[in-house]
Every structure is written in structure tokens, then in C-alpha cells.
Image (cartoon, rainbow, N blue to C red):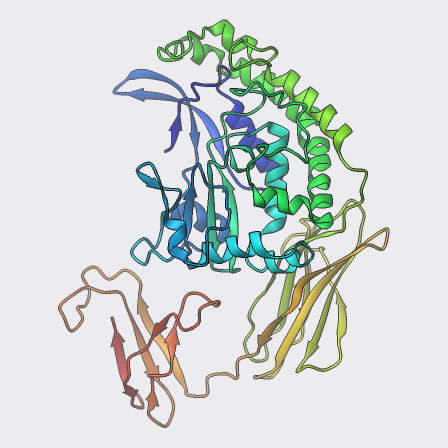
Length: 486
């Protein structure tokens, strides 16, 4: 549990609404209102927000062995030098970029490389370079949510309150926001957040390369504008969402009325809670939630460029097939008028070919209509080099092709050695000990071939991007011999 009192917010729902918008925009995050009782005593109304840790990233990205950095002020992502240790600098009693996983290794080379590319790549080369290390498309949608909700205590304005996770499945950093209570018009600076320019939203006079440099790339600025319009159309301007706001007030008012801690910080009363949805309550809350949303939607649309963004392409993946297995390629594609999604591919550096990808729930496509397009290519012999890119075309014949450099995958040649993982135990607490009398997890290798197999040039890994993660011992495994490895 991660319980937040939301004491700055008389409505106690601003952060909850922020997470709701992210969820409705297909960007993950959750928050729910909860009553807290300890030994039968009521301790008030709180927001229970998902804690961002190894469990969170595993649930979102399917892995948790990458570096997870908690980034707090002054985390502006500016370049400090090529030495990774330069990014271990302190702010008070903590690191600005605080590593929350793999702490023993304490390796900052990945975040240093990302920051180097972000800051030092020429603008015309930035898309290809940055998209090789960072999930740009999802960040642009989060940035649009931040600006529409006036999340000034995040990265863009206050260089604060976000995580970066190095997703080992894709090799890309993922941007994860958190602590989003200072939103929907809450203000400590004398700024009218509802009218602040959506393209000049960062803190004036300070560097915010992840926002300002991306706004200099026409393709990214157009996508960001597309997301601004999309979120207003589908979420913050949608009556279905807007009707949830007064419903929340009616749902929670009785719990606020009996919350013994609610009045203690700013003297709030039940009237403050009720008023905060439709009007300001004074001091740092000059505007209510509903009028803020109405004003922000109107002004943001008036500020938005009149531009037609290229189709969005992201999450390009394949199934890493073995010899003879079909190659299945997936890609997320999105556009107001998407016409086609095509796989462009070739074998062993031969002529390029094309195959139409479908979002119809057939031929390896999991769910129809979920924006994930799929194609299945017949199985290939071992040692075949398969290269591909994906191209999306809209009704106006605008195209996006990703990635910049074709994906390359060599079909494995098969098990030439007759070597097999025969058994494994992933949680060995009392079954069998190793040579040192310790209960380590283990696997059993079986040589089903006719000759001994040397293991010294072979590896185990749980990460296709790092196939040599764990070296096998420098020994030979005889035919029919079983080997237990701790």
C-alpha cells in the first residue's frame, strides 16, 4: 500500500483523476480512494496509489531486472559529462537519480548514455538516436496529460517526481510519473496553469531537454499535439468522464465529514471539499476542478497547431522463432485515419518484400481492434538472417516507418549438440544442497548426443537482449551425463 493524505488538495481526488486519465489514455497507473482504520479507529480518507517498484515494472513491462531510477528535484536530465558516476550526484541526503534496483552493481552507464543522446544529438538526427534508447511515443502522451492537468510538480516544470525504468525486453527507458496531487489548478507560483502555452510549458530560464528538445522535432511536436486533441476528445472533454467528477464528490463526502485529520493542515471543512469541485477555495487553490478542466480544454485547443501528425508506430516486436517456426511480428499503430500497416522484410540480404499486417484477431493477432497489428511469416531454416521494418500509412498517404535501422534476427540453427535443459528448480529451500551445503536454485543439463559437449562457450540467460548473461562452467558434459548446476 502507498497511502497519500493529499493534504494540499481539498477535493482529495485530483491525483486520482490524473491516474484515471492515464488509464483511459492507455498509459498505465492506478489510484483509488480508501478509508483507513487501525484497530477499529478511523484515520481518514486517503488515496492508495500503486507503488513504483520491481513489482510495478514486472506487471507493466514483463521484466524487473533493469535499472529503475527514482528521479527527484533537480532531475532536469541535463548532460553532466561522459563519466556515469557524474549522475550519482547528491541533493541533500539522497541521489537526484536514485537507483532502486541492482543497487550492488550501482551501474549508471545506461542513464548516462540516454542523457548524452538526449542532449548532444543534433535535432535532425534525434528521432533515430533517441528512439533507440527511449520510449518516445509513450512519453509524449504522458507529457500531454501533464500539460492538460497542470502537473507542474513533475519533470517539465519542476524537474521532479518521475521514474525511469530501463526495460530489458526492449532496451528502452520508460518514463513513469508519480506524486500527482498538485494538478488541476493547484498553484503556489501565481501562474494561471489553465492558460499556460502547451508548447512553452517548462520553467522559464531552466533546461528541460526531454520536453524542449522534443518540441523542436516537427514529428514529435505533431504527435504531442495529436495526443492533446485526442485526450480532450476522448477523456477530459468526454461527458462520460466529466460525469464521474460530481459522482466522486457524492461518493466521498460522508467519509470526508468524519475524517479527523482533514481539517488540520489548512482548516478545511466539508464545505471546502464540496466547493473545491466547482470553485476555488482560496490560497493555493484558486480554481475548482470542473472549471479548470473546461478552461484548459478550450484554451489548449485554441493553442494547438493545425497539423496532421504522421501515423504513430510503437511496440514493434517479434516472437524469436526457432528453426521452422513461423515468424510473428506485432506493432502498435494509431492514427485518426489509418489506411494500412505493412511489414517490409527480406531474407539473407535479398530483395525486400511486403506483407500486410492485420488487427483482426487472426493469424497470431491476439485481439481484434486493439491497435496491435500482426503478420505471420512462414518458418525459415536455421541461420537465416531475417530483417524487417514496419510502415504505417494514413488516408492522406502520410507514412511512418520504424525503426530507423531494420530489426535483424538470425534463425537459430537448432540444437546441434543434443544438449537439453532436463529439469529445473526455481525455488530450492530444502530439497537438495550444492557442493557448499547451500540450497541454491538449480537446473539439470542432459547431453543426449553421441559426443561430450564442452560448456565453456555456452551461456544461460533470461533476457534475449543479453544472451551471455551467465556463463556455464568450464567443463565438458559427457554423453548421458546429468549435471546439477547451482
